[in-house]
Image 1: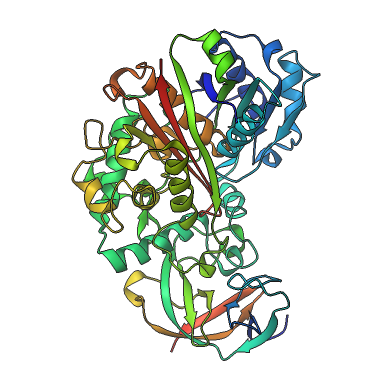
Image 2: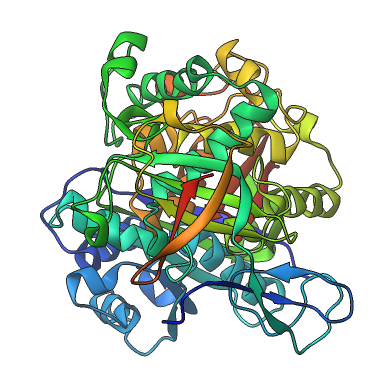
Length: 109
Length: 385
């Protein structure tokens, strides 16, 4: 998989998503462009997983965060270095630091 | 559109069962048909839900159940809408009858998950999320609702005690329900001591993995009046969606589709939230009940936690919510849940809910959510003479 973190942007109204889409959810325009994100953002919300899925069986506890990226879209990320609720708060600055498989790894910045 | 009524319901004991989902759904369907005063041959079409059928290596369950009911010649279809599967199936049956395509339809949902390990079941449940963009980053189903809880706590000051109060109330209601999965009183101490599954959600914030089934028979109002002296009419059957992936939503402190479906349902029924006497809402996690009672409009946004801790949603409170014990106490055999909500509300409206009866209930609301709110169904039922 290509290194980096990406989003899709509507050329007409600027709406962005970091998931899969072929049309803008804001103005309905088709043909979104793929843009590379710088990787910096803030925690919108988070949780600490103690009971993981099979793929993360060896990794718990760790944080999962929904992150507001500076470019104006939200993404989500795996934060393996955050292991308890005391280590993270809504609003914390975080940055993208690489991948493991499909997971986007984020660290506090 | 023709009027559509509930004429019969049934549910199995929820919990761990030895039989397959197919067998349980068949037996429960038969009970619902008998409850309606009908026989299987009266069913025009059947709508089934068994979202996790693959966990039992079985798809295309409809013809199997129809055949076991002796009506292998009738059409059936399986409806999958994650945890809202059977309320979506009820909506389809409703539409068939309202449109005049059928007079009487059967809806049943069921699940068997107890043969899976906790981690296997957690993985299956995560498949209801956006697996590519959410589960691939390590989040589980409880984890997604936990993220909503953190957002709600951060914005509205919702507390752990408020979350706990939902679990304690629903456990206490489940104690009054002989078919409930968890029939155990829950104390604040036991809640606090239970392990944290996904911060801030403790084990007791989460509904259990349950086996079980529930079934509903719907009929045109004309047929219902032939069958029953007192009818329970579906005043509204509304569905709506929300952006599927949590990160694509403007607001994580509620479920937009649930608010939209509720608004449409009240408009269709020509009433407002204050007229509802009893509600069954989707409390897969305690935070989900708090968001539900706000999204429906029973309480203002941000007031759901306070209302819960102050007992406004208890049986005897301002608006009794989940007298059955809800998903939390009664259990959550995923595809059975929407139909099981109907079973509880049908009994409540007919005054047959025993020790958990809400006195004089005439208007009832069912709120059922698929996954984290990508699918939302709201039904309003009213007892009429």
